Image (cartoon, rainbow, N blue to C red; front, side, top):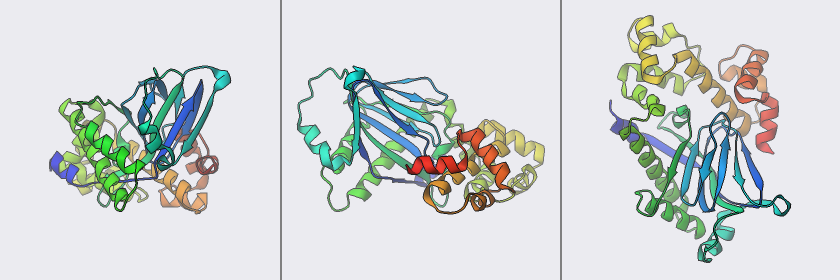
Length: 303
């Protein structure tokens, strides 16, 4: 296997975009979502505060992908007594915004395109969610990503027949370019792609991605990979950066978060589906990882 195979298998879908405007000193708390979050800064300067990470400075052209279940907030500067924010469908305001001459210095406002993405391999989900850290690009006019982002904005501002499919294709192009550049630079945060490239590790990793609720153990996964327990554990750790059971727990919790958000299934049933023997054990681990109980998380993401 090689990286070309991985890129060939990428599939991307997105929830509807929103055009978010922050004026004055205020925060837009995005919270935690079971999917990747995308933010692209159209105008203004501010910052992105992300759970467990250093603050990211934002300016026009900043494009940020944030891993699933990472609580974060967009922040603008300015006067607190004149603060307000709103998020609307981009076709309601984006075309007007693009026609306005933007000669202000960006102080006191941030205008961003925001969305949630699902990025995976064909037949599996949760692949890009294995990235532990945000991916940040500051797109200049000469960047390879600039024409692609401009096309996305055009499709959003003037929706037409096939716009959804076009945006999905353009987003795939963006993600491939961002991953490709980091692979070329040897980014340590993309160790998971080395795991996908290793056929012996990939067999076990694919089993976990496809069915995280199955009763996987190091022994059963090593058998799938056709090697001894100790050899498999060492090889998996070298490829991915942590043991297979650590990764399995993360996959189970991310799948559970998606089910809590998108289904009406009771918490006990979701716990069983993702491989936990009891609701109590699931709730304890979920709260440790996410910061909210399953019920609280479900209520918050729906609100």
